[in-house]
Amino acid sequence: MTRRYIVQFDSAKLPRIDTDFLVIGSGSAGLRAAIEANQHGDVLLITKDVMRGSNTYYPQGEMAVVMSEDDTIAFHVEDTLKAGEGLCNGTAVEVMVEEGAQRVSEMIQWEANFDKEGETILANHLKQQERVRVIEYAFAVDFMTHGNRCYGVVACIDGVLHCIFAKATIVASGGLGHIYQCTSNPAVATGDGFAAAWRAGCEVMDIEFVQFHPTTLFLMEAPHLLISEAMRREGGILISSRGERFMAKYHEMEELAPCDVISRAILNEMELTGTPCVYLDMTYLSPDLIRRRFSKIYQFCHRFGIDITTDVIPVRSGAHFMMGGVRTNLNAETNLRGLYACGEVACTGVHGANWISNNPLLESIVFGARAGGAAVEYARAIQADSYANLRISSDDDAAPPQTVSRNIEIQAAKESIQEMMWHHAGLFRLGEGLEAISDELRALNPNCYWHSTEAFEFQNMRDLAALITEAAILRTESRGTHYREDFPERDDVKWKKHIVLRRGEAAKIVA
Image 1 (cartoon, helix red, strand yellow):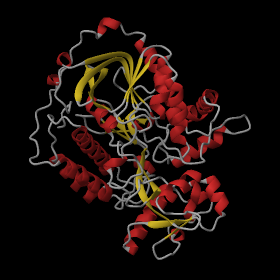
Image 2 (cartoon, one colour; image 1 turned 90 degrees about the vertical axis):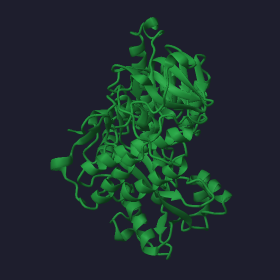
Image 3 (cartoon, rainbow, N blue to C red; image 1 turned 45 degrees about the horizontal axis):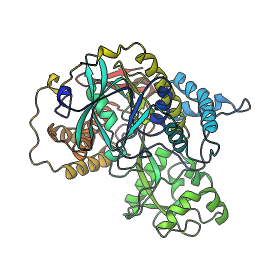
Image 4 (tube, one colour; image 1 turned 180 degrees about the vertical axis):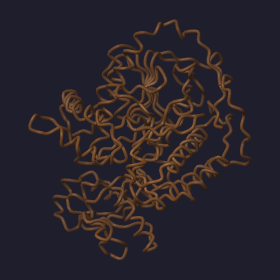
């Protein structure tokens, strides 16, 4: 049984910080939540890295949102529901699409140059606020709870544990791509918010649905830049190391097939040819069009000796986005009072079993604003002295102590998790392999006395990998990004439902 807290602490003996609103994460969702809450109180925003260290998805040249009466909300909703393969919350989708226009209009008003990325606009606007404090390189280890209420977090700041007490806490900590061997995500995306919320008692839903982006840059010396699917829509083709175009073998839409289909096709081709990547060929197109339409990708690749107007781009699939997460309602409320979730860490019901590429930013800014607004309403009812003298300690944890695995080398253990997840809980899944890694993950017992970012990440990766594996074992069908080789067909009769996991309880299957 996983302990309630992964760190030993006593709030009476640690440095204490008090704030009205605590926001964890500096991506679009966290920034938008902080902006909303700041209108009604003091905000402390903590981020694991520096500002802009998030995983918010900004494919170059793509930002679809209904902005006028001439556009049809129904089409966007329909596309989203289709991609979600029966598991989207229709009301949440409608909220995202309908409110998305208003939120984007706000951002345009805040920043005359809307060519800037959305996250930059939000960060610039937040810096203009007077009652916001930002602490960078702060690791939120565990949520402090008493009963069914969240009071803030235990955080590691400059190597020292602190207790941050807040009237309302908003987690917007981003993604989890680095629990896989190959990913488009930044190194900070180790699923910390997911794991901490689950340990605190939050419900986690649809956690088996991990989207793998087909094309991330594959160069040993370069970051795994996401190569936008817009390049395939513009006419780019995928070829194997033999120079053969291969997508027609896998889907009638070829390069325009769904991302999960293309991702699996690429992995198949890599195995058939015994090579570590395939190639995206844009050289058929006008060099001027490529440089203009994909300027950032062109410039980035050029730094590493690739001219995408004349050279093919080495690419492979990588873990990219989590459709599931901490279960919330339409106001970003979790099942713990005082704790809200938004952005990739949350499961709002918008994505279902898969996504369309222009929705994550809309989801972040719409539900980020909703999280901030709901937190304000909750905080208004909190008496300032109701938690002023509250003492919370890890000694309150009733879980039995674990026998720590001997001789764990943290970095090697992290790499072992990444390899297991990639090969057995990634693009292709098989019951036998999932059961095997589930046993191995249970045998990896962390040490709750480790106090380092690397150790905290390992423990979170282990907890989250176990959750994904458990849900993947339970879902005996293939749907969206979840592909079971032993159950290759979609089963709407049995599985047009969600899997909900909560610490210490049996999994629930809900409609």
